[in-house]
Amino acid sequence: MKLSVAIATYNGADYIEEQLDSVLKQTRALDEVIICDDCSKDNTVAIVEAFICKHNLQSKWSIEVNVKNLGFGSNFFKAITKTTGDIIFFCDQDDIWTLNRVEAMTEAMERNPAILMLGSEYEPFESTADAYKVSSKDLVKFKNDHSLEHLKLQAKNIFIGYLGSCMCIRRSFFSLIKPYWFEGWAHDEFVWKLALVLDGAYVYHGITVRRRLHSSNTSMGKMRNLIKRINFLEDLLRGHEAALRLAKDNAKGHEAIRLLEKNIESVKLRIELLKEKKYLNTLPLVFRYFRYYHSQKSIPVELYMAIRG
Image (tube, rainbow, N blue to C red; front, side):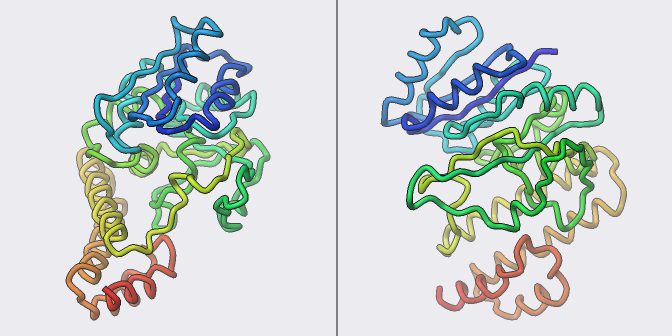
């Protein structure tokens, strides 16, 4: 079984070498590492090229610099498309892999052909004084007992529940869902949601990544800006609609289709509230679509944002 890693880099000079070193030292060797750089303004590319040269990895590792900046989601998607392995590991530029990450997760995939996407747990550590904090509710579900959990498509987990940097996927799964991707859709939310639709989402309850927390973490910024919140919801809507098409194309049951339709209805109401100041949308959102929110705090927050403008 061929094993690949997809890495998206952008201005990652501070931490990229330590991450690459943890990838290189895995107890189960990788067959290829594909790195796509999104026009970094620091010396990320030079550091990566020097690392590849130093360890004579030219036959298995490569870095390509984009002609123009694609943005995080599209750059990662590009890196994934360039891999050729049967299993593709996602890798951020600033974390540190545990030495047996590839071995543990590959063995789980080999033993369970039903797994399309496999997430795992992480251990956070702070590297700057102003680092973002990880919410306790994000860590409480971690067990680190090396068990395997099959996740079903439900209202409570349709929103991504594990880090993309802790995921791996099957090539066959990616080939199937690739046509449903849209420009800018975050790679991790993309595979998470569509794996749930196809009943192939699993979690390995073991720590495989040390997650570095710092002030520039891409995934931890808040969406308190009205325009950013609207953009987020519009992408969320497109993601739900893509998942619904996949469910219908693969003859998934009425329950899954209805769940996706309800999520679509709720997001449309939220967008109308923010863009068109339809304050009365808050009533159905509270009394009919309450369970389709990732966070219940979003209801008063979005009403306040709509009023404030």
